[in-house]
Image (cartoon, rainbow, N blue to C red; front, side):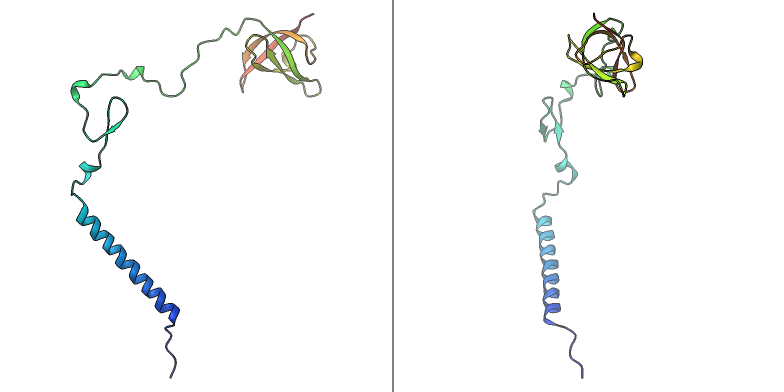
Length: 149
């Protein structure tokens, strides 16, 4: 005769599974007993005119009409910049071998990318320059860069 295949460890695991199942059943019964039966209506929340959540629906008399064209989604569009005006700047960085650099606008302190193809005169770092800007693939680029004497 062989020994029983049920070990102590198997019995303990089975007891834990049974206890867990009974606990789950008790919790389910408690929830059913404590629910007020409101269903979906008890779960709905409303937003008042100040942005706060409330239980009561909003008053239709306080309703304001909003035109769809007045709603802005996303970042507002920038006004057209005057790109043809000349700007004064200082060469922050320029690499002759690679053919690019950056110019810092003296008025707005913005930095603009400059390529060797956009130069009229040869420039070096710390030179004062006059330039125009145009929109490039990755942002604004300095073009028609002239060195101030």
